[in-house]
Amino acid sequence: MNVSITNQIKTNLGILLQTLVYSNIYLALGAAIIAVSTIFISKYPLVWYLPIIPFSGSFLIYNLNRFTDIKEDIINVYNRVLFIQKFGRIFLCLAILFYTVSLFLAYQQNIYTFISALVPLPIAILYSVARFKKRFILKNILVSIAWGCSVLVVGAFFNTINLLLVYLYAFFSLQFLINVIIFDIKDLKGDKFNNVQSLPVKLGIEETKKVCLLILLLLFVIWILLLSLTIRAVILLPFLLYTATFILAAKDNRPWWYFGVIVDGEFFTIIFAILLWWVAWPI
Image 1 (cartoon, one colour):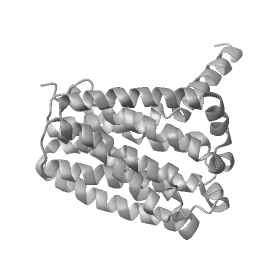
Image 2: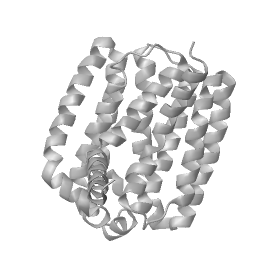
Image 3: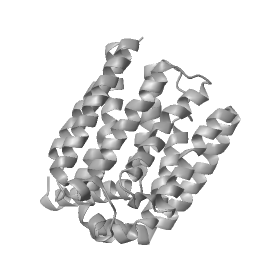
């Protein structure tokens, strides 16, 4: 293949990845995947629009956050600031539209789905607008609680609550707690400059990674409890191993794609595991 064509393909791929990551589409897909995995593990029927509800909530939250984090991102992710200045309002408008439609769909199902779909919004306001993100640990807890709502939406949609859903909520909330803590390593310089009290700012990178590994150990315990309820929880094992890998490899000097593509790509391991399950046990 011609060298110039190869370089053009690489450039186009880089632009595509940056667009998916900086627009928050890539990350919001993770919320949808949590819903899909909850449906799969719980043996619920897959309703096509159900994953759209957590996707749209996440899509709105993070596009709103990009505008409130400009000061930190100028230091941490300058290219993302340029992207937001150019396209941010377009994606924010799209996010508002998606979220409005998803709330309508949720309300059409039942009031419980509607309420669970609303929960991430006040959390986003506290995190981004009220600047709770500057408070030590609280910002991480708020985000992880919001992500766990992807499980709650599924339970509310099918009008049920059981021990399996409780374990799944705890599992995904704690797992995303690891995710946001690891992202604080990337944001270390900007957080220090803007007095954001994150774990890496307080403890340093290596001690922060130890905290994440302790949370991961708890996740393995919850995973074993899930396995005691259903063998389908085995699809979460690659997810856990992938998480362990990016914890150990995390550094503050990693390129943007390490965090934006590799770390946030953790949820796609679940989709691959589900596909493998369907290939092995198609019935």
